[in-house]
Length: 223
Image (cartoon, rainbow, N blue to C red; front, side, top):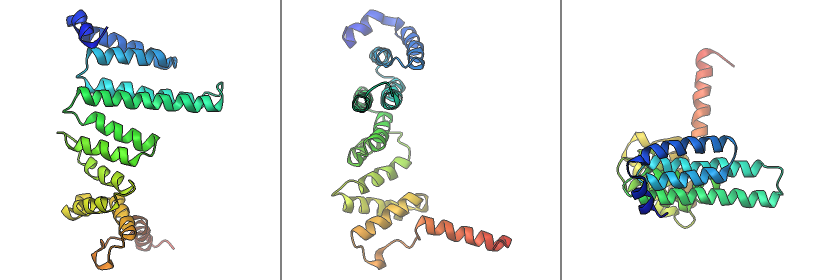
């Protein structure tokens, strides 16, 4: 049945059936029965489309658990393993996009999507777009403001945009002076040939860590 027909048929039983299917999906996960896991979460999200966490859990089972299981399944030929691995990653991505569509005011599916795209496919341009969508919604964690810039910095052709964005964040306060922020800016300064006088004064994070360790050794008398 379609979504509307399913919701109408179940009426007030939707929450109860959803709980049952969640437990059923958990058992299927333990048995690595991915077809059942996918089917159960398709039903769960159909019954409760406004529960964002169901979309995220369903997507996670596909892009993380099922894909990893396919990758490690030595009973299958290598090429088939790779094919199935990517198919499950794509299924997880599809579920997250559907979750975002059904919950237009939530940043959660977009944040998860950005993470999957950069982790599984090194799709930094796609991840930047996902984080940008998340930032357009209320309740987005502050760290996503930086993650968007980090991904943009790795997206070919967007180096100047990334530099302007990250430099504005850097100038807005020390709370944004994270190691990754400093490293990203210094990389962009080199790529864009930013004049030395305009570059940020911070040392590279690894240099800073070595200097702190050296000061500590000197303080406690370790040679």
